[in-house]
Image (cartoon, rainbow, N blue to C red; front, side):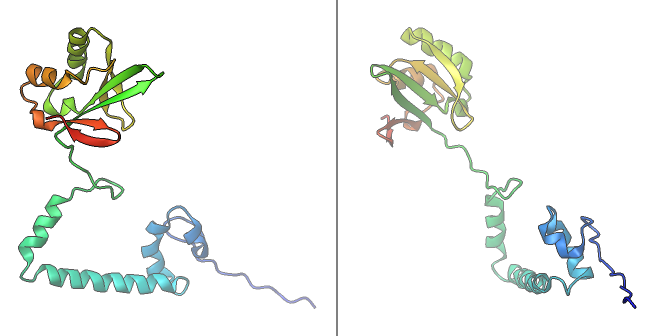
Length: 187
């Protein structure tokens, strides 16, 4: 006579709905971890060990934060601003970068980056630059997704004086040239 097969009880995850053995292959494994630790600790013993270590680390951090060096740890937390996804937000440097790019052997373009940091409207600045140097000037998005001004021709010889005279809020010490890949102060 044939043997009777017994049905197998399958434990399904309460978060993603997959069988608990397959949660690690799902897209929401990080969300499933707490549920797995509580309901299926025998399937993922590494998770149980990691959670015990993390709890011990949290307790030790709390003890250290209540010690004498309480003031220094609070100031470090305020200095770093994190964006979603763990990225750190950097402050924009207060500088204007002028770069000359040569195209088609004789033609060149002068790129001016960072004027908007000093409160200058880039559209107005491009009009003034175009009129002053009798050339084409336009506002374009650069490779870093920030807007910059492209001016046709090599105007780097007179650009620093024009910027400091037209916009007195811009100090000459904040203007830099890019020459051979190196940042050189304009002054």
